[in-house]
Image (tube, rainbow over all chains, first blue to last red; front, side, top):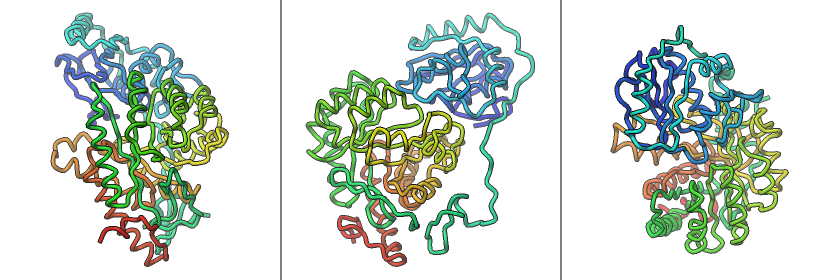
Length: 187
Length: 299
């Protein structure tokens, strides 16, 4: 799903475009109140986190990121997201001190990451599954009414170069498939 | 339907043949066993038996893939394997948590199961500790997942196999070689819709032509993540099961087809596809199907 405020799309629901809260829901069945800006699940500690960064900095009204529910085993995506906000990434684009299996941020530039870290205050509710407790924290943040963080920032997705081939039959630049279906390496 | 110029390696894991030119060996089907909450091992036993029956009937080899998330279930799942997976039959162990991956290897060694284990998987998140553990307790076969977080295209997948794409100090193939793993399968890493999901299928012939290794993927993951399909309740299960036909059609050797509950759909669909491929491969390329191929069993 894509919309103007959240151009990277993903698996999320939108509510109040001027809401100051985004909610990441890990492994629990929970629907926050309609005053939040956006909420949705987080599965992976790499591409999933990239989408959260991009979709949050594109809405400057979002100032709090509530991460709640049971941590995703193995991926540890919630803790990796918190590590990113706290520590940033190293020169290999690995989230510093992230506990996830493959915590690499590769498709979004460092400026966007820095913007995310400056814009957002994380409310760490990992392992909190009591809905009342989560609601309470969300209400507290709503009442703080932090101002918007300047203008929206549209992160450019870093994508690999697109192949350009004259051979319309080619499935891929590395192979040729002849009319019989025989596959050969190109060149 | 393809035939490859590169010589194709066929690996034998406890009598199951994986790889080769399309049309020779039937597609190997990995059925997922996911234990949630109070693990129902009685039901798992029934499903396992049912899967082997379907395998015998169609000719498509079945390998149970045990997904282990919780450390408290680790020993119970291994005991289930010892008691229920017939002696000398292979199985795969699918774990994400790096710590659990290390622990399970020692358990498999203690239970004398390593010779039947397909380790699912090695990927760019591999740690030094995991490599050390794999050297000490080496499984029979390993699945290399060609996931590249910065480039999901076939080129990106080759990059992680070849050089590690700056995420590991060397390529996954070299890592496997250093561990002295002789039997290697490549999983082309199916991504969610929106993240170049089609590349997992397109990469199959590219990787098979590049390395000649048995190649496949868990394409059903893409269906699972296609949220819009939830609105089409009847179609969703069919789409999930039939997504797997893309793998043999593009020359692939194995499908990690998701929950074992789908066996009644997946086995006949893949057997049907394998027969189609075999007929073409024999007529055009003179490639004869193996003795246990669905084409020799189903008329």
